[in-house]
Image (cartoon, rainbow, N blue to C red; front, side, top):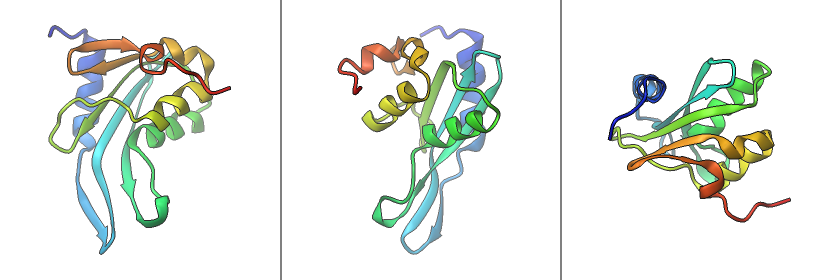
Length: 128
């Protein structure tokens, strides 16, 4: 699969922060990373945090939180990587979250193993 330079940059950014580690006997982080490119061209990254009682969050949420801190919500392209460096889709909760932070994100190009698809293809039934 031939990737455009933006997706190559996003893969590099997400790869650079992959750092799986144990935080405590029952908490870990860095097994999944995500990189998002905003309408401005800025790139934000994030890692997952796994904790008991569902207190952690996905890498996509971490990256989006960073973007929102900088008053940016329109995601143009995104990639998520597993701890093995494999491209993976965002989970259902993250797909809905991406849409909820900015309705225009239905057009976000999400990189999957076989190439990019628009978020709306991965989120056929919107919650309103």
